[in-house]
Structures are given as structure tokens and as C-alpha cells.
Image (cartoon, rainbow, N blue to C red; front, side):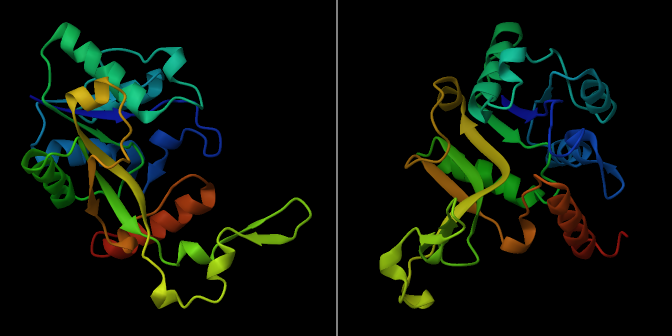
Length: 231
């Protein structure tokens, strides 16, 4: 059995009602639900939420919301792995144990069906415990610096001050779209980013964090450009 879990708590701070805010014509979580349905990869699609409004909207787009997430997993510090693990435990208790479990974020309108399917293919064909969407940094992280309390700067890697960009090792980061995982990995709370994971590489122009209103506006412009025939 293959299970999809879309975590969507209601207490967003920086963007009010972020998970159901209208993004390019529909609630942003709807893009994730419809992607999961269109992929035909899942036997069940569950939205894990603590919010009745999100629950009702998720059901209207075809997802299951069979429980309300407990408060201890709904604050600002609740991690993705414990939330997914909680849903898996509910699924095992009430129905059957899944073999593969995929978390799709509620704010992942750039996630593509082909990447989602490829993530499952790699998980099945490798010894990895997780596969996840990733992309490369646009600028060498070795040349980065921080701004201290006195407004002065300090490089994270001073030895690379004079290094040429082309001589520095390329770095990558989580794209924040989806995570496929083996059930045992989720249940044992194993970290997603580890030596036992395989990245599914996504082009940088299909990746945008959405944490602030500025991020939201940038994401909408990007999405409209990528789908200009639809807008």
C-alpha cells in the first residue's frame, strides 16, 4: 500500500491561513491534493491538520481527513517526521500498514508529477530509506557571511575569501516539495537528510520557499510564467 500525507496545520504566523490562501486561482493546498490524485500513485491521501477549515477544504478537493492532529504536533516546533509518523500509526491501527509513504507539503505548487513518480521509482530500486526533492544553490555557500550584532560581517568560511567560484564544490539543499520514505524509516523517526537518502534533483526555476508574503508574491509570478498559457 502507498500512502500520501499532506501536513497542513492551521497556526501559520507569517502568512495568515497560509495553507488555504488562494494561490493562482485556488487554495494552495489544492495544488498538492490534486497532484497526489493525478499521480495515481496512492491508495490513500490523508491531510493531517488541526484546523476545521483546512479539513473541510481538503475533503472538498478529494483528500481524506480521518482525524484531527493533536496539539502536541501542531505547534511551531512540530517536525515533519513526527507528524508523518503519527499519521502512519493511525493508518496501521485502523486499516493496513503501508509500504511506501510520501509527504507532500501543502505549499508545494511547483511539485511535478514526473518528479513525484521518479522519487518512488528510485526508492523502490535503491537501498535508500528516503528520496526527496532537492536543488543546487545558485551561489557558492563557501563565500557566504553573517551579519553580527554590531552590524559587521564575518565569513562562514574565511579561507575561501579569494577562492574562485569555479574551484568551489557545488552545494545542494532540500527543495521542500516532497519526501518519499519507507514506513519503518518514518516510524523510527530517522532523519530525511542523511547518507541513507537519495535526492531527486529539481531545476532551481521550479523551487521557491514560501515563508513570507514576499516569497508568496515571487512564487505566484514564477508559477504564472511557467504556466503562462493558463493565465
